[in-house]
Amino acid sequence: MTAAPTEGVPLPLDLAARSRRSPTVLRILLGTQLRRLRESRHIRLEEAGQAIRASHSKISRMELGRVGFRRRDVADLLTLYGVTDESEREALLSLVAQANAHGWWHKYDDVLPSWFEAYVGLEQAASAIRCYEVQFVPGLLQAPEYAEAVVRLGHPDASDEEVERRVRLRMDRQEVLVRPDPPVLWAVIDEAVLRRPVGGAEVMRAQIEHLLEVITLPRVTLQIVPFSAGGHAAAGGPFSILRFAGVGLPDVVYLEQLTSAIYLEKREDIDRYLAVMERLCIQARPASETKRMLRQLMTEL
Image (tube, rainbow, N blue to C red; front, side):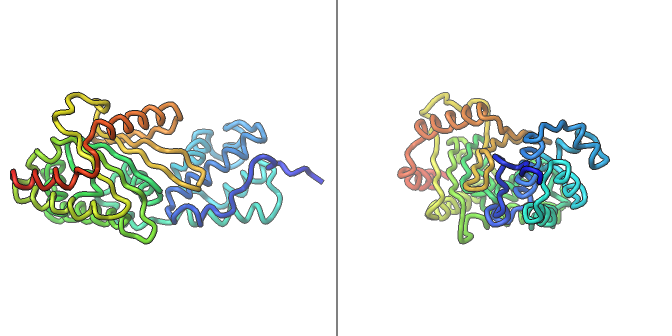
């Protein structure tokens, strides 16, 4: 009888239940489990690639959750990794179809770049989202009028139909804040965000009214870094930190660029951004003052 090769590599049989139904997270979790199994058997990427008639780079992408899975490939890898118990095999193989499923955001494929698609999937599965913005109101907190103005700034040649699609995607993302199990959202924004008249005074007035409403949600916190704070810890620009409770994923730092994005997962990178976020929260005005500051800004428009 062959000894169980997965000792010390527990198979998380409830991955689907704990992933908040996000195919993006399921792909990452399934890929992570395959990597752990491969490493427990000391099998090189090249060997794993040969087993499924593919390159080592495909194995690497599978383990990072950046590509879809074929049930046959996963079955062949489990055989290579010595997973022979039928219940263990089926527990992982049953996730393949779920991991390959399309999230609701796929209906926006025509306006959703691939580098941002991963973020939307992670955002929908996160238990906590912390973000800092220096130029615009965070997407999850934007009013429709403001979102349209921002979209038109970034896509000046877009048709009205495309602009409407992009705004609708942003509004649909915001549903995460009012679902039965919403994530904690803690946003810190620079005062310049609210002083910059994106779309004009009326649009900014609607945006501030929207913020006054959304900060009443029990899991939403908003802080403002005033001009009087001078220079501060996040001089490098905006960023988001996503946390995933109970699904075995590390925190992820998201840095958006003009035509791409960077996802940081190394512990030292995460710790550095967490430290910056903590300093920002100290430099910002307390959340208890946010409502007063917003109302004051409203009178100045």
